[in-house]
Image (cartoon, rainbow, N blue to C red; front, top):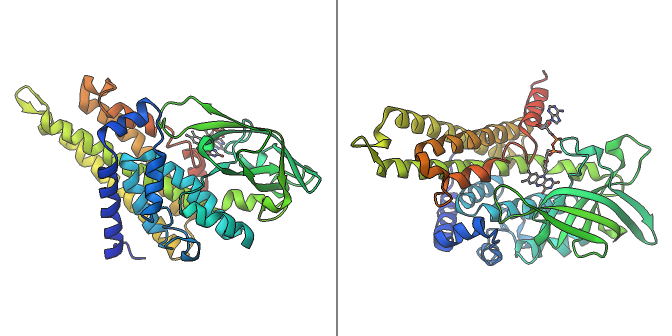
Amino acid sequence: MNLGFTPEQEMLRDSVIRFASRECSEELFRKMDEEAYYPHELYSKLAELGFLGIPLPMEYGGSGLGCVSSVIFQEELSKRLLPLQMTFQVSILSAGMAILQLGTPAQKDRFLRPLAEGKINFAIAFTEPGAGSDAASISLAADPANDGYRLNGQKIFISAADISDYMIVSTRTDRKVPKRAGITAFIVDSKSPGLTIRKISKLGVKANAYCGVFFDDVCVPAENILNGLNQGWAVVTHSLELDRIGAAARWVGLAQEALDYAIDYARNRSQFGRKIGSFEWTRDLFAEMQTKVDAARLLTYRAACLMDERKPCRKEASMAKLFASELVVDLSRKMMQVLGGYSYAMEYHSQRYLRDCLFATIGAGTSQIQKLIIANEMRL
Ligand SMILES: Cc1cc2nc3c(=O)[nH]c(=O)nc-3n(C[C@H](O)[C@H](O)[C@H](O)COP(=O)(O)OP(=O)(O)OC[C@H]3O[C@@H](n4cnc5c(N)ncnc54)[C@H](O)[C@@H]3O)c2cc1C
């Protein structure tokens, strides 16, 4: 396993950093949070610069650069443009890679190039009001009708459903078999008659909405089944490792950003005639937190390297996600203390970092579920 970066990967990191500092002004940074403004135009620019195609093969307009490069991109993008990283994760990594690995030739031809070109977005609709961590217990029904299926039921907490053109939806197609054996995944047009999307007001990352999605006799042609009838569990689970590595990269990026912001503040703020960054407790805190961010980063790149080497990385992906997500919440909370009373003012970013990261330990599998996976992999 090689944990060093190639010159191309170093260049990739530099170009994402340059992109984010050039395109994300302080005004836009605030607007995304205060007005829940989603910068569509920047997502198109990411496509033009070839970033969206990083994990996709060249034949579909991508560059096939693999997981480590994806992680570099996501880590740097998350610092200033977290809402775009979240779209990249669901649209390209979860949906795109599922279509690439499990789709029919016609589905690949139809969806992959437009995804890499940023012309379409996908959402991933698995969670239901009664099926969260236990994702196999879904009840949204897909029943045969004419030459396709009719979908009835509800999904909840679906990221970026409001800006999606399509969504991959897990449905129940057989109620008589064990629950994982009766699931079918469909590619559903988000503008289908009978499909309603409602944004749910939330605490952080406001520019990237999460939504309730309601299906009332939504007709989907049989050709939109992904991976075959009653083979949907493989779709639900196929990109879990990739998702977890991507989530870990996101939280490493945000943790570093929140830490750097507080360090900058502590270097400039004086009390009792001293910079507060010179107090023993702040030096101790910053040293400890930077060590933990580096540890989270190493766990993340280890998992990404294993994935690029096509080696098993279930345990390592869960470890990276668990460690990075718990860390970013702890770190963001502690950085509030460094800023004192200013941390609580909306004008300062510390409160936003904390709000943005509070779902880290829930989305892409909760911390408890990550520990369960790690313990199982350890044969405990
Ligand atoms: C911001 C955000 C974006 C999201 N985006 C999407 C999306 O795009 N698509 C999508 O399909 N879903 C999405 N989700 C949903 C997310 O995947 C679920 O919230 C998550 O899987 C947890 O499910 P739940 O909320 O129903 O909690 P539950 O499963 O009800 O869990 C509640 C608590 O019980 C614990 N728990 C559950 N089972 C066990 C167990 N076996 N052992 C120990 N503890 C357990 C959990 O760890 C948690 O602490 C999103 C969620 C958030 C917050």
